[in-house]
Image (cartoon, rainbow, N blue to C red):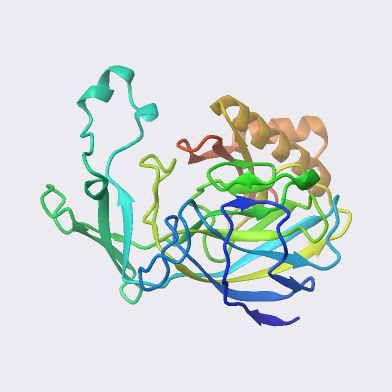
Length: 307
């Protein structure tokens, strides 16, 4: 296993079969940085055009279509003292008649809230606007990666604004440090991309952002040969989970649920009826995002019921 320290000089706002920035072996670790959703780096300077710019791609030797790329999120650390969010929830998550009552922003600079990030204290504190009833409202940090994945099949490049079977802009608050994520390998080398760090985010990304910030990241990439999956999967200490990305919302629920049924039968030895019975009483769902062009739903099963 080799640890690669990679300093990005170029970013992509699509996930696709771009020229690899680095080639690694299965089991290698990459230490690198990401910019925020607007292309701003660790000092707040504009490094690259906005639109969830991705660091990478990273080519994993030996990865071929039909394999699975295993991504362990070793470290996700905000690397600057402030982050930003939008102020208003998306119109599609409220009743239509309520939309006219929402606090519609004016000029672009007035649409953002600014948060102070303190890694030592583990807090995000609202510092602008200071005029709301929240005051200097503080919340615990929960750094997560909003957009990451592998190159789609057939040379397709997909905008980092959205998501599909390859991953992408899923904005699931469960993609935190220590989690292992599985992606279907759809092209040679997998071509792994990562970016769009959030210091904190609520379910659904309903304001269209988390607390957007640049990151120091460390990931370990490995290949499961001949292991074919259809949608992203993941696991943490307590759950296994599957991810469906689509619109409308019921379609991403279908993708995530189907992938979980497949997983329970292929890896956990359950017969079809047993898998259905277990999910019927034990399944949990998390909303990844309900803002982007494709919505994200996460289907979870507690590991305690699988032991």
